[in-house]
Image 1 (cartoon, rainbow, N blue to C red):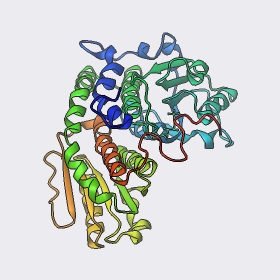
Image 2 (tube, protein in one colour):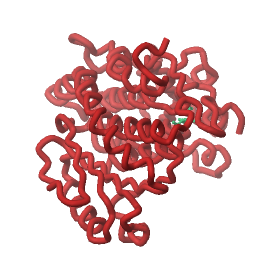
Image 3 (cartoon, rainbow, N blue to C red):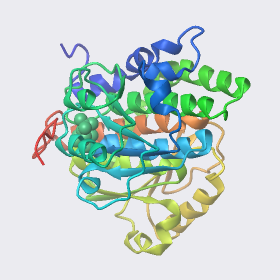
Image 4 (cartoon, rainbow, N blue to C red):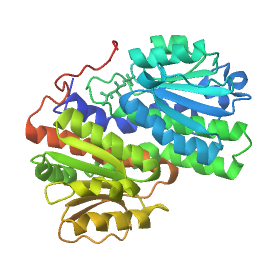
Length: 366
Ligand code: M6R
């Protein structure tokens, strides 16, 4: 069943172009952005929603954190993203005009399900599940559903589920923007073209595997790593750190790069590799100065840059160029090399990649 692959995780990383194509099937060809992609009742549920609350755990929570940037920038809707296990026990201020978006690969995560029920008990009935399993508890409990079509994910580490969640969230952003009169036809077409091209763009990133494998060789001996990112790529740094912890058992932390000098810079020395997610966006110049701060302390840098980014490769600064800069959807591409890095670091270390110690695929208990 694994075919040419050594592990399910590797197979699932490489299935991402197909999984994204399937998830976005409704806009293939000439399909437009429509509220109905989220269910027949979507027009009435979305109408009048003024803000978004995302509830999820783990990798699914990171997908929500990326989407927050999109909801606010593109749909102009205020958005809060909360860890389900916190939300369910916290005294919060309910607002019935909130669209509650629950994200879960399995649809059975106990805390996420309980958070959804909690939101409903507070009178928030505008609920949407973004889920990979149609017949799951979270889907049954939600007013609306969007089923990602990643196919079964066997590896404990979530990979194709994450990128398909991002695709679903991008589509949701556009649907809400359109409903709010915030999306011109030109903008819609520009976004649709980018979404349709996503499987091809991801395929090109996957071709960087041999280079990432070489980085992983050096990496695997390290005990700690620091991930940096800014804007919508900060959650991508968080996801990269989670993957490295989860399957490579390397202690990793992610920081918004601007926070570096507020504490974590003290940790940086030659034994602390720093991985920077550095797309060619408006924040690149700021990030570059953060990287210099790291270099000045002897930290070794591994930079995931975009094509054409002028970050010089010097002693202790390793640059991997992504094939192209991908605008709003750039986080979908930038997570792929981080998945591959942790996979290959895990291979070097000989850990049980598909079943990391102490973890379960679906966390159905609190
Ligand atoms: O099935 P869910 O998406 O609700 O699962 C949430 C988390 O348990 C999950 O994403 C976990 O963090 C992954 N193992 C990370 O790779």
